[in-house]
Length: 125
Image 1 (cartoon, rainbow, N blue to C red):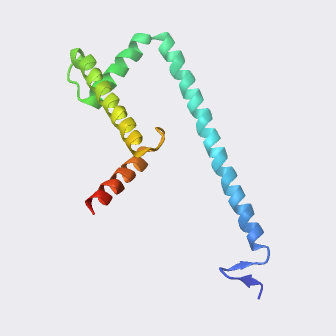
Image 2: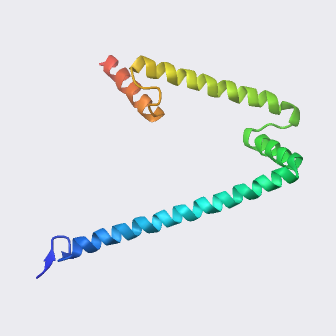
Image 3: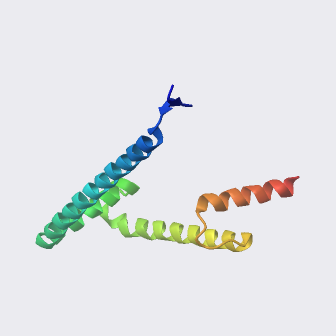
């Protein structure tokens, strides 16, 4: 019997490696197709924006209103400022947490939360 453990015969590991390479290439081709499609869409958006910039601005404001629950146009800038302030406050808190933990500022937020949780649990013991 030429079958090895796991049902792979002689030359099976080479076939598995070739299959993995083929799968990787297919995935790469898929990513390239998505990128090309995105570029074409972005180009079309650029042409559309240049042709009718006021339409684009109106659509962007309308989308912002729907996404952030802004009932009327007059409240858009106030809500934008509130969102900017909240994001800025979050960024300041993150920098302070990284500094307190002694980790790099680019440390992923999930890792910062884990470290803070661990430190809190250690203090509780």
